[in-house]
Length: 539
Image (cartoon, rainbow, N blue to C red; front, side, top):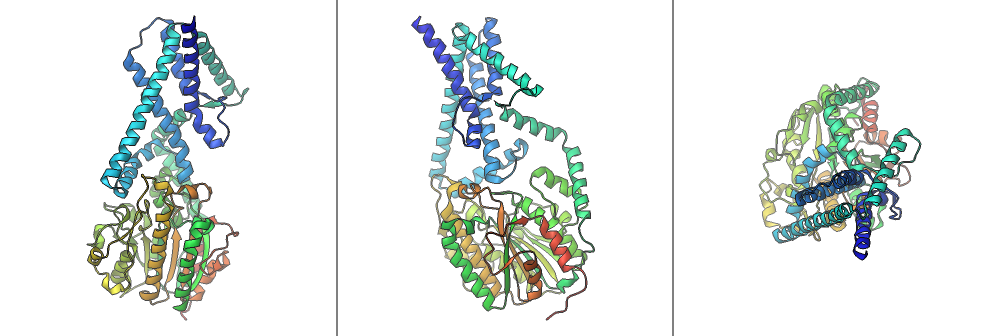
């Protein structure tokens, strides 16, 4: 009798533990106590299969229990991915899209750690996975024994009957939804996207075109008076650099020095916030949003955008007689999107001809990128130029920050960096999302590089727009649930900065923390309307 009681108890405990494990993500998201009032439909499906097999006297191969354990582990991983991706990156998890980025994440961590550290971390992760599979196999084995010996069959059958009845009631609208089927939902959503992708793309593209058609026209950009326009995307330059006290303590003096230096060289500065469509990553989605006036918050909308007839910012500049240039140092393969976005020339990684060492995540220094584009495109221009820079020195994992070179004339092809070393900020056991120290150091470097470029190299009255693409992939930023990024607008011609002040930007480098953030998609409409029309006379 004692053994029978133990079998029944162990079976029930195994069911409760499995259910709690599979629904724990719901309680984390809701920040509520872990009370087992939620039922995992994935577990219910497994219990139904086991119950039917036991009732028919079937023999369950041990291999099948291991496979079921692996399946439940996959369910658990999908659930946590569906929770963590929106938390850190501000968008819905997509199985089809995000699996492609798993190797990128692994590669980033690999380059941020020593070989020994990476091997240790990989061993720990694989060990945890192995232990999880073993634990799930043992729990499933306990359930199976209880069903076979008939000690826990009434409990399991009763649970599955109630759960299935609950599902029917929920679908009929007569019961609340305390059911967790998040992993199934993820797979179902991904399958639906895959099956309907062409239709969805056409529908999204049509909506995008309708939105673009409502913008002011014509977009002749005549009020720029032929000035160069430099749109500089500063990687991960988020509002958290101002709102987090620890970060602000370090970076506010850097910004103050930046402001004093550029103002001493004749610049007017205005700053504000824009709300990025993403956070923590997905830079290309922010770039597309900023330059098309369309909110692009996922890969499917991005793909649809490329099929649309929306006219991007570079296309408007090109139509206005500008040379259009994209500086993309992180791209090392063909970029066919350049044609859609309206760029005549794209400088990719190999195109820069950089011969120095690589820094964080195999990047070249932002200071080098700024100098290379200046020499090739701006120093002796024949017609006005629009340049879109995608800087990368402040990209995660923030572990290796380039040194600043005081004499810009010595930057050359980058070989001089080989003798300068770097500023290392090692990750602690691969905790990329907690690396605040490295992020702050990288952001300081970016601001100082831009300060040097504006004061020592750029001598005309170009309009310069420095904007973050998204908040950094840090827990402290994700916890704010804020997607705002910092924008600085500069020019030696005050008339080019004035329109941004009219849109709520504040004078100087410190935005109004209580002023809110306009959608990033609003920028293009402002820009086209403010700078199109009668030509502006040069001062």
